[in-house]
Length: 448
Image: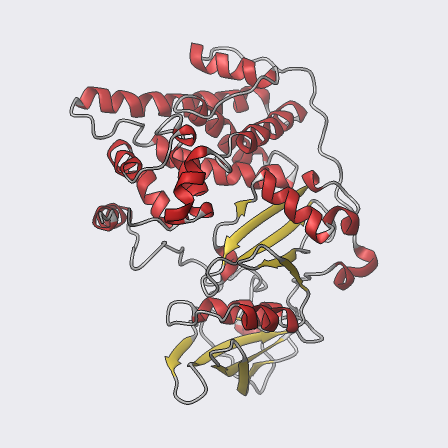
């Protein structure tokens, strides 16, 4: 069996990343919520919405909402699904646990959902996964005043910003340090790990010892006060009941205005732009992808568009991968250096052309409508259910294969219609090593 790990180490070293036994995780935040949220495929979103009665419970169409998912390191085959919308209060997120069998259960702050899942699918608790599990358990098993939130870095997602030593009440420690990574050591007897964790609950902080059992049960002891009666609390509601009458439904996405026009585009870029504004179908290839990514990246950064949060999430994931792919083009290993450089230059030129469209249109309804249109094109081009994914699934699993096909699409046009063979990954490495690195990090495929 071949491996791309050695190649990935080299690329990761160049980027200043550390690739150990799996996907790379950003270190600026320690919590599980900083990890990438992948948009649900059209078929899975429809299945999820039907299963949980989402539209009925919230009272708006699912297309108005942003649905993302991430795998759970401690429960192979399971995932955490997050639902958000342009509703009020903006800090409300709904979460659902999807088990290996495809069944969904909402996480509402009560522990039975997690314990039931663990009984059916015993958690894989190791030195590499126990931290993620403690974050998950502490956030989703709640007391009357909210989650038991681990505190490891000042940038953790739900940690209130701007905490200073002056916020701590007299009589308690005022010299706690952030970053303060939790320390987990293997334990004996009925416990797998004993972890020293700094916890924030309501408006107080304390040092706790968490004893993790193989079943996923956690016993917390040794709660030494660090701070109390602070001027803020954790604001992280996860149910409609938690926000009560303050909930306001999200508004409808804007209707598309008359087709906007731009000038000065290269011929290929003008062709794509015209098809985009006229509502014609577009295939995401090595020309279309960087152009749309250039538009999307610029409208996200300059304008915060599209306004629809579901479309915005889809564009964020799309631009992150497409912009990196354009750095090397689609013919990196060609012995003719001129040909290799030409491919990269062409994709980078299309990125710039896409940004030009955004600059000319400005941050208005016309650009917002185009952002929603790009989101629809990305969704329509998903490799989910393709020949490639179906033939790849027995080897790497459906989600990893869909991820692989979607990332490789601008480098290997037509990959979705192929029958999977391990040489496809070798071809990807030759054509664009940066995309191969993304496949390892995002899709979890390092052996082929």
